[in-house]
Figure 1 (tube, helix red, strand yellow):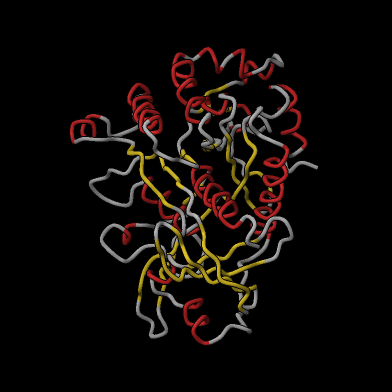
Figure 2 (tube, one colour):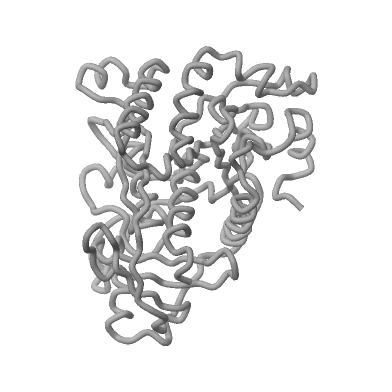
Length: 359
């Protein structure tokens, strides 16, 4: 049984069938396993680990609230058997990451060396005040996978563009960014995953009502998609996986579709609330959206044992995500949506690949 609701299944039947050709059987299986884990996690309250079998040195690192320790550990659920492991970074040498792997209770399992995967984040990293959307996406990638190599593909570059385009980046400049990355990859740059937490959603209600195929009848009529599709195809031909947010729309989510997800091979990430697709999560079908992660996150102050505020936590993971400063002090209210789901799923997939064959 799919995680999609019955209503969503009707929409799925209306707008097309079948997964894209790059979504292999093994990838489908892993995706289903990760979706089940995400459903389980969003259904339950926060899991507390006691680390009853951890030695003092490991226990100190596992429970530390320092930002340094927070970014050198991760808790990973093996999607193959649902066993939980805590992984601590021990050091880095020649581009590899040495780690210490513990079981759910903190008992030592083994030492290992990981080959970091390369993740590129496309987002807006400029703001004269406050935390940018891109900075938040970077935090989520690095917290859910502190061992990957993470790079920014700037949403905007140069002070002229920053002043001129304060809202969404015009599509011709967005295309330019990906063309620049495409050229770098032709010159030997290695990129394993691209995380895009923006969605250009369009209303496909009239096509869905006529039981048309959105990909061919509507979305692909966009000049922008026709221009960017060969760039994405070339990037993906080098083994790079591209992930994009399914989009958010509280009122019209069932008929809103993110246009770039119509490009075969681009993988969509929707969001969950209490184990079900969030009401605002768009692109609701298996062609456009294969992956699902948590929708909502609440920023909280983190205090040390003496009651001193040591940072801000947004991810819900143990420890500190960001230090206290004039930007983070402005953070308030619930944050989330499909844009937050993308970096989480990308980080998890990269981590899972890094641990393949080790556990």
